[in-house]
Image (cartoon, rainbow, N blue to C red; front, top):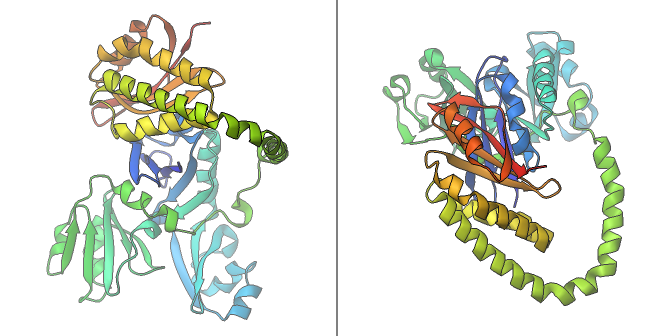
Length: 395
């Protein structure tokens, strides 16, 4: 199951940061929230361990530039984009990060952002020990508009705009009316979220209600090849990955040797997995009732992680822990369990949880007698306190 963690950064470290866990297969939100500032990015470490991390950059800081080039010219200028666009830019190219985001029909499109911002965002993520694979300007994740259509998404006190495959940006609400006047007055406006009077007044508007703006952008990630991590910022193989290549080769050899034995045991293992899935689903239902969002998905995901290991002992340990904790979970019906992961090597259960107040987390910790409970960093958002609970055997 392919899951992604999307992190929507702001322009400075004091702005709130939206995040969302999304599954491509199920097209569902696993968990979401808002961090107060960049210092709280460290709270996303548990979610990032098993997911691809995608960063969305604020459109207010990104500019798109286009230039007509034939294919031969395009192949020659890959390493000199700054000087190629020097006349169109209002700053020294040496201070800008300029990367190619599209080349089609003889038209080159580049995204331009200040290098100091790239370094600032990079530092936030490094401090939080978050490894990322793709950085995308947020407005390029809006649904691709139809001809003569402009798509707008109400977000962060303004609107993300997209007016074509490679056209878009961000407008503050106070500038919205003047900004839209620059477009064709006959253009249709497809607005995702609240429609302001500036948009609606005298314009043809197709309004769609949106509860979670970041979900709209998450739906488009798998279709977007754009990545601002180019040049000095390109993703480099970590030492762990280089070592993993050799381990993978050895693992493939071992798998080929043991394949015959695996297929001989397949029927027995599948029978055990079926029984375990039924037990796990029953325990989820008894334990969480209606407190788990997307409950069928979470059951399938937890079982998928265990079933893939084909480890009967691991599955038994998890079921035993859940059975023991069931009475405690029932004592705290106001706690909302958003995601669950199980670390086989350390025997830890890690929950992403929200509750009405900090006292609920402390009361839960004291109520668990059979296991050690560790409370992660807690933060308040929309009258709820969000954090992690790590549960393991007492040493």
